[in-house]
Image (cartoon, rainbow, N blue to C red; front, side, top):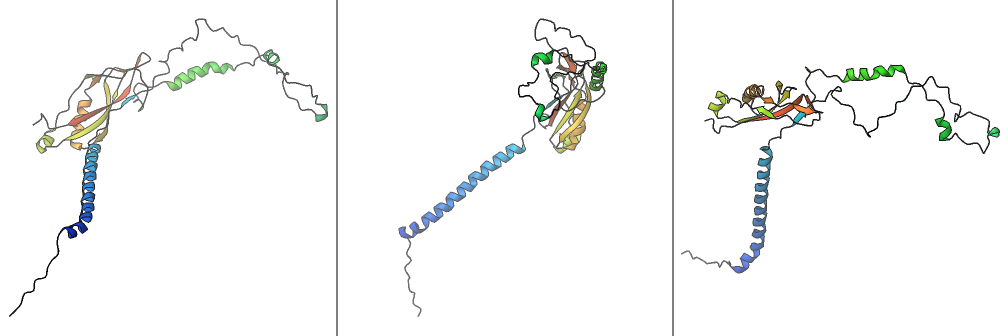
Length: 242
């Protein structure tokens, strides 16, 4: 006949105290990992959904658009008469001499002595230099402006055309963003559209077609209109299109 022997099992406050600190540290570490994961996921989502701000680009002004510089005083500048060929100055020109002949009392020419010498003549070819510079700085109105040029008054939108939502994207439930830059001429009309960035190629044609119909007030620099580049963001959303 089998006999059952009961073995006492010790379980109580003493055993719980031995493992309490271990499991408390494990729970604390698990809570810290969960908090860091939640914060990191939130910041990552915000960074991925952040859109770039539009950037205004303007064109360098013409040299002919620059007015004369303002006068520093109310008096007109005195006219300077051109002199004839100057004689080579003899005052203050160093001449090598033997060391034995050098006088310790000899000094260099003073400012008064140097000012009495005639100024050298200026080459007559300088008269054509200004015309050459003006010709070099002349910008063709049919040439697209550079990416960045300073301006005093930025262009503002006069006519805004919303892009047509593509039927295929509407049926498929697609959304996206398209960024383009447009060349705005001196009359405020769009001369050219360039695609900057797009996350859905299906919307690029609709955005380009709409951007060509926009009208702006021209940018102004030195009281004259200038050509500029202006960036336009198009965001295609299904809200209101269903």
